[in-house]
Image 1 (spheres, rainbow, N blue to C red):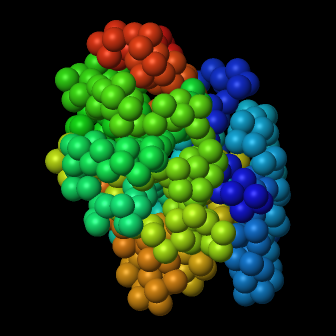
Image 2: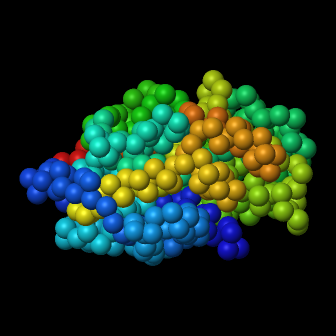
Length: 421
């Protein structure tokens, strides 16, 4: 269960329970700090949640062996996402420089940038993003400025029982039309995460984006969810749940429940993160040797998965920004990114997914690359926690019959507008 717990924790980023920091425009102080220590070098501290530091420890050791005068010290943060964020926010609000580089959940990047806490990766601190998956770069960009270096990524996949269906469904209609096969075999059709938590935000935004809609505009503030396309995406979830094509247990399922049920042979399809493939192929799995993977389904082909992962940001008050920048770039090197693939920690460097030796070990990599190429970050907004809560509350009400889809998206839109004021 350790493997499952770690994977679930990195897959599902929970909305922060603590009160949100009042957002401020970049003050004159932060503006001054952005121009300081651009060539600063020396030892630095790298902060990251403890659930995934095992992936970075060997990377830090490699760096330290090659840079004895610019060593990286690991600062382990709490395992829970909200506690990690709170610790970083407290330090940054105080103007501290105790953390030079911070592994940020991608949903935090816009908030931290809007508050003036991150050093823009521009001019002498610019990094080469040309080899990175575009969606990961988008997740690290706020108002057309790159504020962090993508470290690792993630996207949900469609898992299917290839002993029950010969190939992945071509689109959403093909998926729902095939649910009779599941009924004939006394298993659920599609199991996913519709419980009222961050996983519901992931699933709802996947549906909205797959049908051509969006939640907020490029400014991170203007609600765009009350559109025909967004309504069509949410309606697809509502209709499939009502028809029993999406398993009724989905409204009480997290990634872990989805994983356990699919590995136990209880559903024909499942949406989940890449870690589930290894679990499905382990000895004792009821579906060992019977699992195919594909991008999630959209209305006219593959859908748009919701992006996960970490972005590495430089503290605007760091005294060693040149070293911090070089360490971020080192993490994006082919050697390091390949090591991430070997640990089910999806890399951001695109060509790693074409490595035949890795594909032989991890057959899901081509499908994951396809999913990542069309993936969309969760709403890039400084008000992410409030936006996520608005999505969860209203999508859950629509799926369970408490609201119409029209009312749900109208209420989402109103809540987002309030949050951004």
